[in-house]
Amino acid sequence: MALLYKARENEGFDVLQEGIEKNAIYERDMERVKIMATRNNAKPQIDDYIDTPTAREKAMEKRNDDIDVIPDELDDEGSKPSSTSAQVNGQSSSTSSGMTIDQLNATGFDNKRDDHTYRTLNNPTGDWLKTERWKFSKVVYEGDCMPGDIDPTGRTMLIVSGKPNPRQVGDIEYAPDLFLRISPDIRYKKDKPGEIDNSHKLYIKAKEDVYLSIHSERATSFGQLIAMLEEDSYKVRTMNGDNGPIILDIKDKNSGERRS
Image 1 (spheres, rainbow, N blue to C red):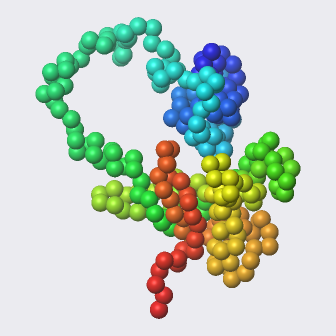
Image 2: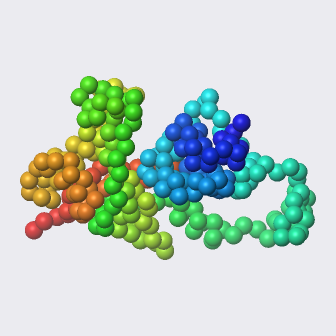
Image 3: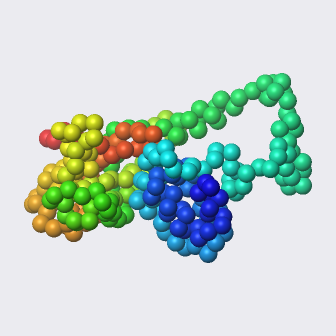
């Protein structure tokens, strides 16, 4: 039985968390699961969990082939249509109702609206300046263990998230949600075993470069490093991934500026 159906019958929060942890729910499916799951008395738990970086990041990961997935044909209320017709606000609708294809052709596309929407979905890449306070969270990926890890139960991930200063491109102002994920535990890329992964690279860059540049001394504790990531101003460089911007680099806010 698909996870969405299970959410209708069981404890909503447990089903939602199960789906995300097993990579069976994409980010685009989370709201639909939330709608069904909150019919149980789990709404406060779900609201807290669904907005954490852990949940959203796991929801962005690729699904495993052997996990049940949510059928695409489910409507927004999580129900599978029983037929091709339904009652909407007292009006009967079906696949054959409404405008004909010829009428739709005569109406045409709203290219201006669609172009604007398309551009809003594609955030600019490059440098973003962070000046506001970002939110911190910590995740431990249990079972992902290597000698020398900070936590023997798994890999520790330090995450700060928030919006950068807006950037204006044409008639659109962009300020995407960004997630900076750094790890003090060293790992290597799966496709390039000799190359350190981005989460550890960003940790080293934040600790050995950005903190020193801002405070003129090295960080002596995780608390200091985390406070810098939350409170201080710096730049991050992004690229666009399948599920939104990905942070590739972190640097001093004056990086790249010419100094007299």
